[in-house]
Image 1 (cartoon, rainbow, N blue to C red):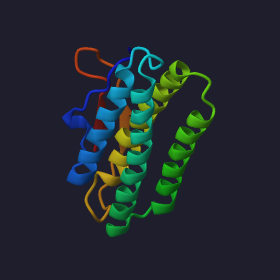
Image 2: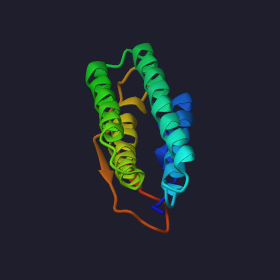
Image 3: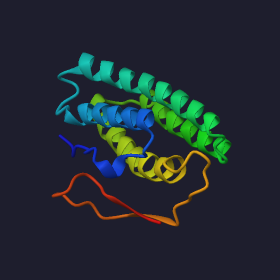
Image 4: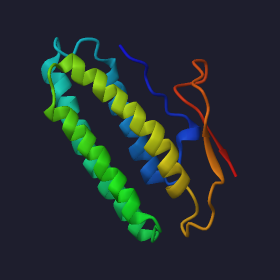
Length: 157
């Protein structure tokens, strides 16, 4: 079983509906990580993968609408990043050799996505005031601290 991802207050963007969706994505990712041997529970594992794929689509549609509502300046670039994530997920699902391999690769992808997209891109770009007037000077990833959760981020204003 892999290392679970922990939702903390540092993960919040400050946009309630997006935060709720991100929190649910953490939960789905953790459910996938919790499978010790996907082959033994193949129907449940496949169902959860399908659920994740559908929920990612729903989340990205919701985030796209939010970006349109706030007239987000880097809209096209952010949407392109969403497309790249969906493509990565689809490529993993198409290139499946075994469920155990798929689980390991999906776990890496989910952690990368959460680390690079949700906790950095979304937080930096969408977790600011609705006019995009504030910008963070830097977003620094701190090393994993096993006593304080999966990964911590420090926002320096």
